[in-house]
Image 1 (tube, rainbow, N blue to C red):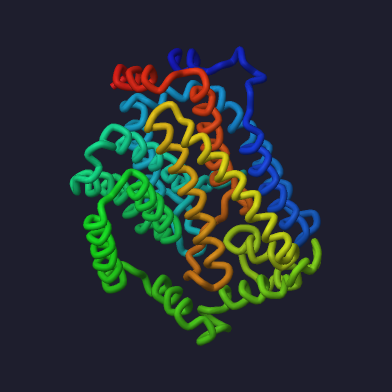
Image 2: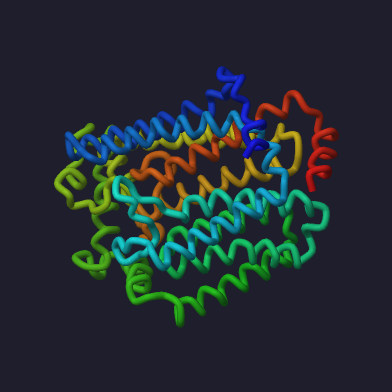
Length: 382
């Protein structure tokens, strides 16, 4: 514990912050907050989300003060990995069941989803693994070993069942494998294994509810009053936004509660209805600026580990955005995933801002420490 606090830069309370990372994240959170409030007026969602945004920004700042070189220790990364597994197992026995999924701890004032922590830790684990083996990444064993790390999370999430989070885990792993440098032959092998796994899951793993969601995706208008209702209402909401939207507070699909789970799973559809195409462009620009700046720090990073961490966080966020938006516009099955910063919820918001805090912490070394010196320091930690 003393070592931890020794790495916390408490004396640098006014450290240099990359505002091109902080401002887009805060603005995106604000857009989601305003959209929530427009539906319900004096909303408990609005009040709690405002509290979570403030707390998340504080967490981001505190994490940014920590010396990021603490993460170079294999023991630290592995401990975080084991702790995440412990939480995912624990929630299977003591978690609250919400909409058929046992994926969160109900702590009274708030709920906590271990899947959010597990996804962040997975990026760190894969970055650590690939950073130490980037020269020999073409060997198939490293693809399989890294896949085993991800599969443990995937399997535990699938048991909950939280298929959306499981897909995020797979997409994050696959993206980081591509960044690390996978051969075309191995890429085809991964696709083949993925197809076989998908067939096996459909035959023996998917619940009837999950199969229904996939079928409703393939035939969305087959049962618009039943399994296809959510996707149908979501596409109506997005399409009815037009160029400039219906205006804040005038989203009929959401305000009249035709659109379910509008503060979480369908926040993009609700946002698009009220803000229109112009609002969606603002949404995309803010994410583009955020991703560009994170990739800038990945390119300027002092070590391969930091490059992979920053790039991995971009992939993690991007997987959330693609799956959530695809689900909201009817291009992907409804899996129940949040979108970074916009969706209601504390645990996902805190972990996303904590990831930004890690990027901000790592960014301070790219200007002051030469790459060769830092690489030697990493080797000394192991």
